[in-house]
Image 1 (cartoon, each protein chain N blue to C red):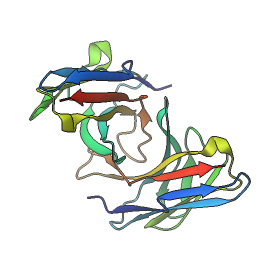
Image 2: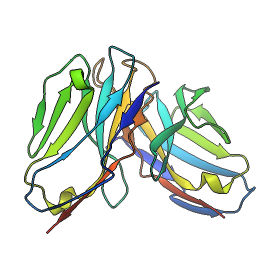
Image 3: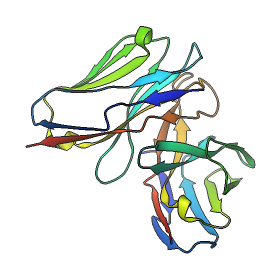
Length: 116
Length: 115
């Protein structure tokens, strides 16, 4: 069975610090998708990134970067120079379906608080 | 913007009452999903649909039914609500620009309280 673990329930840092959110996954499939979503205090879910398992290139988008390591089954998310607006709950998710209905399995979420 | 709306946005109901939540999309996406969000569990898939009248169960489907009579609407019904179904319910669609690029986008959520 698939499983996603976000061991950090809550993280609190001071603005401008770098912070890394951990995501470890389990799957028997050789091909799969990984995702990160952001849920700000307003409650909506915002898509951040999708990574296909056959594409191990790391990605950077502004202050956000993602480190995908198949060898350790991890897909960690780093925010550089954090800002108060980054305060949110962040979810990592996994899907084994590359075509058709995409049944996501979510981690428990990490609540990130950025203090001014 | 994936054009997803959910109604109602908030609902308070009593145990044993039937409840229907509606998800509406404006862009003809084939796949639609219902998830529930609970503290400590993240989001869990309840049911999903892969076309009109085509639905299947997810991880936590007990106590829920769904229907999809039109492409744009996906209904979630709690036949007899229980307090354990107090949750935030999210609808989602999946969208892809090319093959192997499926991504799910979520509606604004419905907060349901069962007393």
